[in-house]
Length: 497
Image (cartoon, rainbow, N blue to C red; front, side, top):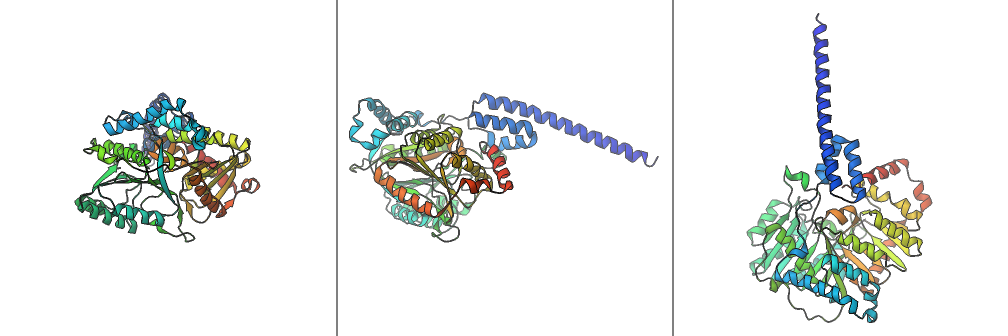
């Protein structure tokens, strides 16, 4: 009798647990079915769709957690072309006029544009990215150099400073910039700073409050606060934009953080690429900033005309500013990369910290290499994110097997995002060569049609290549089985997160 009662209790406990488990599984699969149908109806990239279906059906509980963290999409339509303010509409009109004029233009006198008419047209049509030809640029390959230039330009600001960064961290650089912004604000300069809510989440609240108390507008893009975390991990604003008085603009890969001060050859060195632009392309940077700010405040500054001054630069580099966002309906930077790669006749050079190409880009690179174009890719030899880097390395054997040259950078972490086609076309900006940049993040890149500029990037690319280990197919095939398995697993989930 004494042993009977515990046995009965154990039986009912087990039955209850089984019942709870059964109910839990049933509820989970109801959600799974709903989310699978929802995902199918969204008509996403087929690879992404199939990956989500596989995760949801094979790993229902973990799949649901991953979906709520990474799988949701922005529903709000916020498209550059639909902005109604006069100065923004003027850029759309300029782009539309240039597009109409393309058929009647005599391109034969301009070798750069003759080569890339299709790319120019695509960006005009899909991105309202007008083409300007009076731009003068400086290119920086380290944080210390670009910060010194930024300090000087910020100090010279007379009317306004508009900044937008994915990542700003407490430290020497942030303090220096903060001091200048506050001083300029006290001098009557309008100062506005937009930061991404996840990228800059570690920035101290005291730092932000100090800026705000001194007249600096600080806006957080989609800040993450529980329980809204689930729909905000994706769709981050990864852009880096700085505009001073509408005349000077910066964009590229460098954020505001002390890690960029580490010198070449020292442990922790970050190799990156950033641009300083003086010319009409700055207007596009400013327009994108203003649209970003409008997204957050539902307001424009008064007298927008003053933010787009008339510049008297003489002819310089041809530039289009390409931007992309998850709700624009068009993966503009992906299309720019694809179109540019397909124009290559002799060489394609790529540097990217995160290399997870979609199938169209992968096919374009392989086709170019098999057609006699020399394709070189520099990737990090040092891992900052094991999951992402294992996923990137899952492509290496496929690249090598198709005659593409792959290098692992070993002098630090290479964070530059650069695509160079032949010796005429360059794309530099914030976009990595991966799904997240192409489909999920707000990104920006400068498309530069200029031989001198391209050759300066090639010089740096060759230096980076000399600081890298060239990977051979025979050696790569002999890597440990553990690495092969991790790469294959990471690749399965790469399109999702």
